[in-house]
Figure 1 (tube, rainbow, N blue to C red):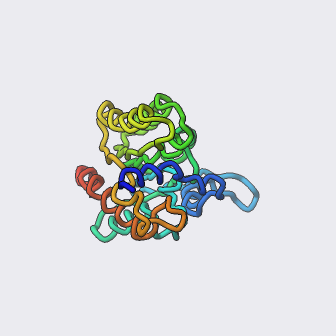
Figure 2 (figure 1 turned 135 degrees about the vertical axis):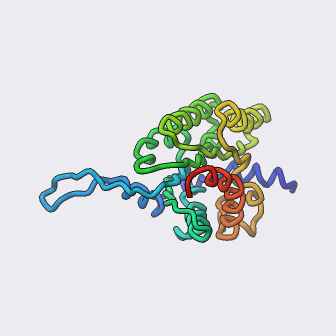
Figure 3 (figure 1 turned 60 degrees about the horizontal axis):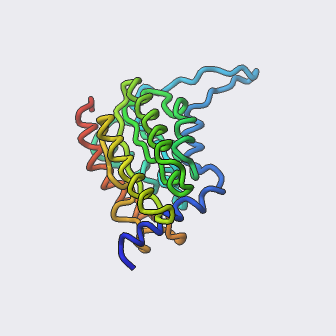
Length: 236
């Protein structure tokens, strides 16, 4: 079986197992950080948002770290890399299993709570899985990008592949949408989030769809090569 075919097969099934899963601990952690606190009398208080700059990962099960311990998820690995290299940022894992680009857009506002400096967008796999219109996916991602940039937040967009069962034209249009969007909106771009991992059994968990700890480390390394220049343009 060719490497490309293995990649496409993985994308066909991507996040299917996670769609029925409960929201992961990573997502609950991100949500809780944005929630309001409550006094003993039941009065809701505005949270004290952290002053430390934040990097938010807005994504699906690939971001949430489906099948992994929280510290093995890509956002957690990025946090470890930041800490080791002396970058003073807090990483927020806003990944929700089974989410689409529309779902990411709906929860964007609370995901950007706090002093967010950079947004990593990893969405679209479930759009492709369901055969949703490419134009709708592109528009959702464009809106996310523009809303983030209105707040002065830098954006890193990651690309995704669509399954082959919707035809070659859909697959090509889907892939091109990410690249064109990154160019049109002038944002940093990582062409394929699962590059070097998709379709390789030894780098995925038992379902063959989601990266295992070794695969997660490869994704983190690929992301870091795009992320580091963005961070170096900001205050350390």
